[in-house]
Image 1 (tube, rainbow, N blue to C red):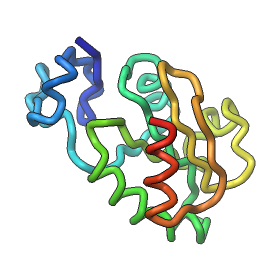
Image 2 (cartoon, rainbow, N blue to C red; image 1 turned 30 degrees about the horizontal axis):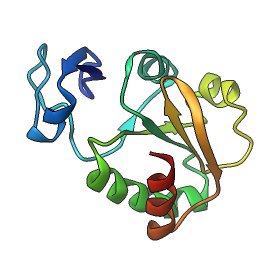
Image 3 (cartoon, rainbow, N blue to C red; image 1 turned 120 degrees about the vertical axis):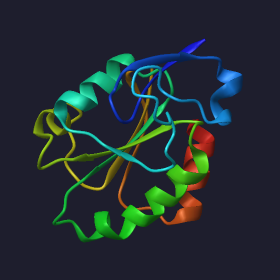
Image 4 (cartoon, rainbow, N blue to C red; image 1 turned 90 degrees about the vertical axis):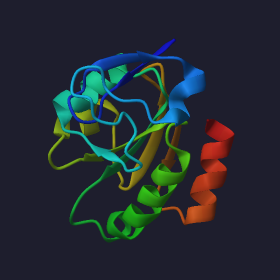
Length: 141
């Protein structure tokens, strides 16, 4: 059994890894645990995901004023829709989640970090086209 957080209420849910692709629902709010799109997280939500989520987290640190971030957003969303529930995809706005950006020393955006067990496992700075993002995730996940 692994623990994954509900994207709607952030309640931990235990689930058999073999059943992740069967459309599981949250035991508390009864909504789907996997929605096929990245979650937006502020500092509090991000810390909860880091400490409680057992799936790998693929985090896009971005900002609204960043042109490359905006260009990469649809690519990140497409990959999230294709790859979930292999990993949980999260977007962290560095302007609103300053603590998270500082904690991981984010100096350029977009920056992607894959977290496993709450620890950074891989990092990539700069926007990636679709194929490069998929290839990078395949080597990391």
